[in-house]
Length: 92
Image 1 (tube, rainbow, N blue to C red):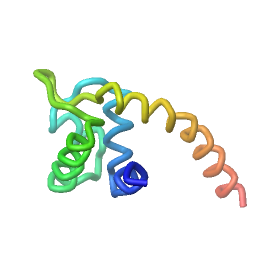
Image 2 (tube, rainbow, N blue to C red; image 1 turned 120 degrees about the vertical axis):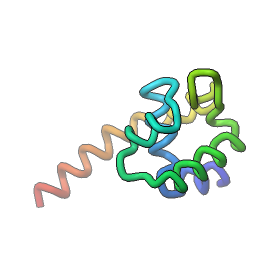
Image 3 (cartoon, rainbow, N blue to C red; image 1 turned 180 degrees about the vertical axis):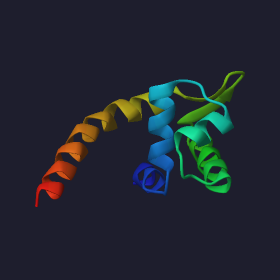
Image 4 (cartoon, rainbow, N blue to C red; image 1 turned 30 degrees about the horizontal axis):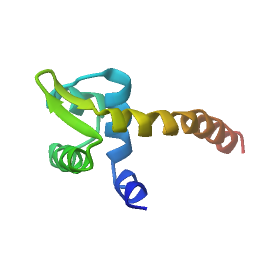
């Protein structure tokens, strides 16, 4: 349940998803990719994701760990389901 609690926090899944799809990103580049995230929220989520060992910092910026990649790969199929659901809602 702790993983769901962490990923349910505002922007946590978005940060993990962005890093998994983009590769290493600096703080500034990650903030630009996440568009409306504030620096304070991004900083907090990065700290939490690092403590959970889903994200790490290396010489190129922030990256997903092997465990973070594993979580992303299990969540990725939900992306298509979310798009289908959004289309269904828009159609009504």
